[in-house]
Amino acid sequence: MAVGNPFNTGQVARPSELVNRTKEHDTFETYLDSTTRRSPMSVAICGIRGIGKTSLLAKFEEYAIKKNCIVLRLEAEEGKYSSVVDLYSEILSMTNAELTKRSMLKILSGKVSGFVNSFSFTLTHQESGLGLKVEGKKAKDELMPMIFREKMLQIWDNIKAEVPAVIIMIDEAEFLEEIKGGLMALRNTFSRLGEKECGYMLVLSGRLTFHKEMNELFSPLTRFFHPMELKPLSENDVKQLFLLHLKKTNVKIADDCIRKITEDSEGHPYVLLVIGHVLFNQSKEKEEIQLDLYKENFGEILNYLAVELFDGMYGKLSAAEKTIVSQIARLGGSARVSELVKAMKTQYGALSPYLKSLVRKGSLIKVTRGEYKIFHKLYSKYVLGAYEKEE
Image (cartoon, rainbow, N blue to C red; front, side, top):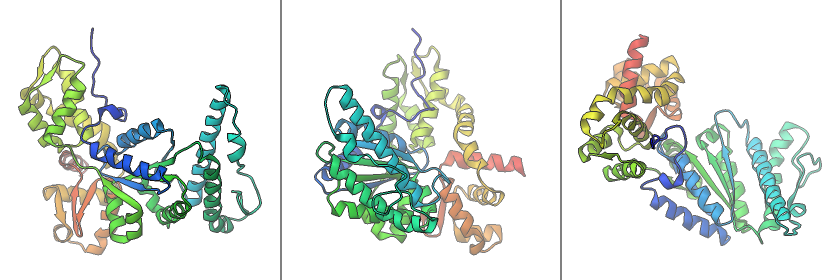
């Protein structure tokens, strides 16, 4: 019977497919245990595009649900929230929906409970206090933190006997930085709820700069959102990943091929899945994926990465951003700002906003103050070709 391609690049990796994330999972277990004991711990998962942040969130969610916790999964997305009020409203709406579902399941299973009546709320309550709708945008923005905090406190008081913790996961959380005071508002609100021994845990997930900017600018955020920075996979990790995906097939992979794949992929999980996907398709009746097969299909791998990842990233850049990232590619994939200023015959002030934007969009990584690198060497190779075609 034919075996389908075990390297699925179109979906988030299943929790059982993750490798080298045991330390992160153990840390999450510790933080969750602390939260259930009324000493909440929150975390920020940081890493470059495609490093496996969303897959790790799925693993954490699976574990928390097994512990009977409520898990809310939100995606920030660019431009989704105009203010923290929008975020608070979505959290409350999702909490209400989840608790209603739980209560209905209890009723259907024959377990009588006043669960719903004890926590339900309306989004159209006009009075001050625990309602959400307040006349006037300015008044709403000013009162919402208090309203949200009191509502979450009320909800917790009514569910704490049956729910050990509520986990609020926000993916692509770097976009919350675009909301003025958004991250600090979250920190302040949930810090206050923690003081009241409410079992709320925040898990934010964003690109690598998310943590670095917190570290440099907002030390209170760093203390509240404990950083969990995802690193690339080692050669041994890469081997384990391939063996894990190939275990249901009769195909093996040579060690020298693994070494070359590790070098070219830089241990990047999504790039590895693309490589595995292409090589498995090309292995046909072969019993082992060897180095020659990898070299023969390297061009196809680059084409696949272009379509699935690089085209979208590059296409979102402005003309000025494309010029800057192509210049960094010409300089070997990394450069100090002083080098860019000299090469492009411009001034630092002119480059600064574009560099910040390139980091936010995931094309660049800020290595240290004044030094940047392209997020992956294969993307650097792609950029050189794409920019030359546009010139």
